[in-house]
Image (cartoon, rainbow, N blue to C red):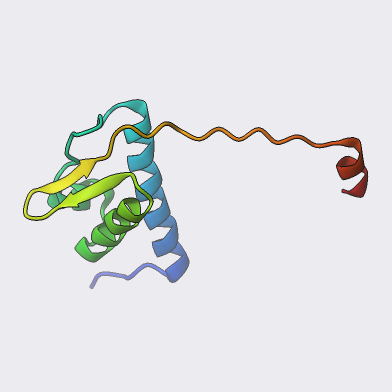
Length: 97
């Protein structure tokens, strides 16, 4: 009998799955226009169920990392540069903290 993960474990696994793919896209493992591995290979690699992998891929699509190509696969979207934020803390803000 297979033990189901708790909700917290599921969310943690899903977050790690998405973060790993994002890191691999950012590092150039999967370049713009390249296809991610098949869902079956992602299921084996991350030891997740098919619905969980699909949910993660849908979230990556919503976030603008990939695009789903029907009956073909998931393609990495290119042309996006990482956003850099610079935060400053003035004397007044620091005092209020």
